[in-house]
Length: 108
Image 1 (tube, helix red, strand yellow):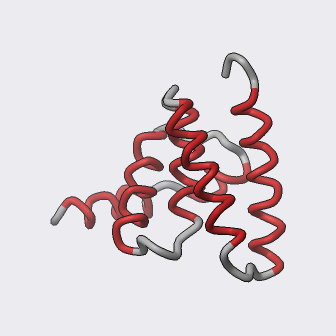
Image 2: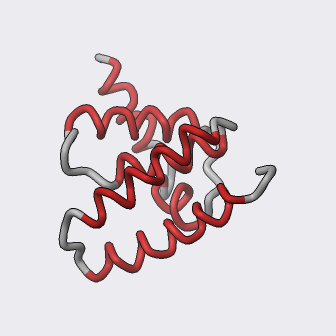
Image 3: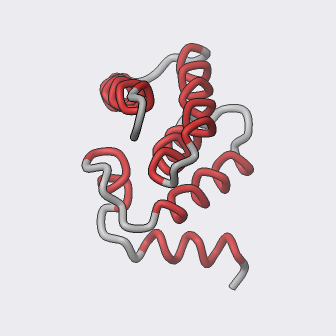
């Protein structure tokens, strides 16, 4: 199995992976979220907001705060460039608010 296949296999074995990342902010392996964000950025380079959201949260948990802030800015840019569905607006509004708050603290 190739590296991308292994990544996707690992993610499918985690119950409610996206809930762990976006709803509860309690994923056990943030490197896995980072890898998925990198994968999505590679296959959907110009249109995907989700990849940058994954990278924002993963980098924050991995202690790479400058990278997390950069990815959060990219989320804002991508969201402002497209029409979001109502469920996307709700999810990303909460996410952006949470991450902005957490990344603005002096110590995370």
